[in-house]
Image (cartoon, rainbow, N blue to C red):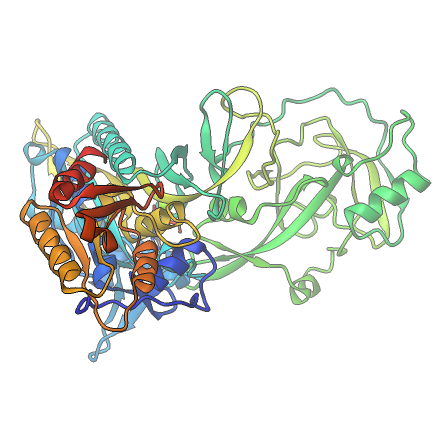
Length: 591
Ligand code: ATP
Ligand code: MG
């Protein structure tokens, strides 16, 4: 340690919120270079390499072949798939000295697809799985929690190439099994959830989420084992119900622009005839957003389109669910200026009377699937201060379709399993994805089949967040004093502390360290002399978090040293002569 490139910090970094992130910085594993961009110091790099090694082993075990693409990429392949524009602001674009536009790869479907197209021509060349462990670049809107969400980060990305659906399914299943092995070895709690397919376009897709209260992703599960990312929950269409409501009638409801004020006014001035009180769930709320679409086949320039979403008044539109539904379009607010352009919209009193592509506003109108045909609603009458009561879906109004955008709540019925849903939070650690032929078609990746006919190759893409994994493990494994690495990922096997001043102590500590290293046990030896007190050394050992600490101190005079387990806090004294054996037992015995 006297020459190791390491300085531990007493103070928390100002920009860190999560404890694991703070500790990675304070214990000298990483340093921030720019927002969302991190330097891996020697200690951190050791952990990172161990994670990489586990990922590499399991990828090779399913026959994956490693290669490495550049991060600096040409624009053309990404134009061919439209991701140059679809990726939006998250893509790092740059221009070289000749004026040629390039990008920093956010993920590499295009490049892998083209590489296979370059080299392979026949079904006999397939199946094929290629992978890399490489830097990715995304200009994330909100880089967060250090390495958990970086703008530069390491991903293992792999891609499978098959001649048919059955082959793709096999490759997908192999990846799924490999990911289970990887995440079991990394040792954090995770769930496998149905995922939204997002901007990638494609069918089957699952995510591996590390379960964590600080996670940015919300997932649901039920008692039967069904689990899904909240974006992927598909609420079934409510079946039609018999119409029981009388004719719709417009009522004056002054100063009721919100659901709360409306419900209060209804109960005060327009009580129900069946004796129960009006609730927010009786109202139909119409939310207008602006969709910002990228340029596409039909639009040379990016274009904007208003969208109206009808949800029961006791639910919000969930921005993440909505985004997933409309991707690659981005969701923006519907501003005063937009209202000015749509005079049929009465802000606060918008109703289905003007919504829909066939109606006065011309604004596309999509309903939450819980809104059954035949059900009656209180909703805006499209005049300031007026609502309409008993407006029946299917009888008095229709929409252009449905959308899965309303919030999902704890206790909602499980859509695909049994019982009700519970909600929890997680961090996406891995994503497996059946792409199908989308990329191969766009880039012309075809091979000859058995009959000499050209067929489009079908692809899968699979990612693991390698730097993110270090962040998640740090969040999961620490106490007040510092990090506590699981054995398999610790930067060193044993942290040897020379606690004292005498030459005997330093001599014995050095000798024990050498013996351990000779047996293949890696040692971080705190040989700092002079002003560095044993107290400082113990504090550093705690914050660094090597799972086994050997203290060579006062006991040496009686021929004993102390072995401390950083994970349990247990200490035991062993005779010097037995120390190496005991430590090897600790290191090899437990995993
Ligand atoms: P997220 O929803 O967290 O933004 P994503 O779905 O965009 O992730 P993918 O494109 O599926 O990410 O990438 C594969 C894996 O790479 C993710 O499962 C995650 O572990 C990791 N990853 C993605 N973005 C980042 C990032 N900004 N920083 C660190 N790791 C990331
Ligand atoms: Mg993903």
